[in-house]
Image 1 (cartoon, rainbow, N blue to C red):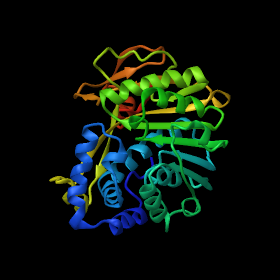
Image 2 (cartoon, rainbow, N blue to C red; image 1 turned 180 degrees about the vertical axis):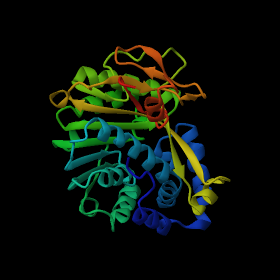
Image 3 (tube, rainbow, N blue to C red; image 1 turned 90 degrees about the vertical axis):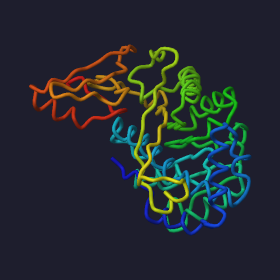
Image 4 (cartoon, rainbow, N blue to C red; image 1 turned 135 degrees about the horizontal axis):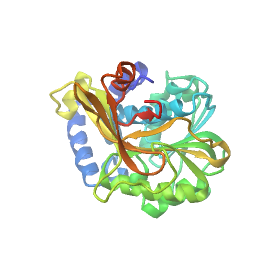
Length: 329
């Protein structure tokens, strides 16, 4: 599993960008704007806003993207991407996550509409891995498909960007990446609204020719009933500066996110020992561990691991919400 904390060089660069006397108000505006589902061009209108975004949101965004990339690593351990496309890149958070996840990454292309974010991404990339220092950071509107880089790219990432698009634009963007990217990772806020939108995008991706690798262990419709949604959580360590900025009283926060890992049909292969994805925090008792599952046949179910089966019980105790349960468990 990759380290889900900001790399030291990136964390230090983020702090260097911060102006404490301005960040508090900018961070408050940022939080209020995102709760109201306002687009970034309104929530982050200037350089101070981008610095506030980096200081308040990059740790959680980096952790969530890294956790989603870990799912790809687990499912395809032989995948060693060289070329990465980061769409709606913001300050380059997902590009950093990819560069830290795979030392094989040698070329990164970021596409971002905001000049302030592009400037910040350039400054933050200094001192990072070589692929970041030499990254192509381009101006671009991700709804204008004709202007997207043609590729092909080994990996494309769209992180916390689809949420700001009209749903039809999000569906078109993802469908257009078939042929541009062998693998595609989408990460969105873990809200009912964004889950519903992600399921519509998932269907568009399937029709276009992508194969769902994670979290779904099947290619059928989502079996969850109306009012429920698939998401997971990653714990984010807070620095003292981060705690002060967000008004926190504990040295961590839990970032809830939804995600999809997609692969092009030519790269697709079936998962072995497919026992299902864990949909909820496991329920532990002295007698057993109970997992709620989305199963490979497209249905919901449960699995109980009895404590009397010591080896299986010990292994199951290491699994958590969002993990994959082997059929051997």
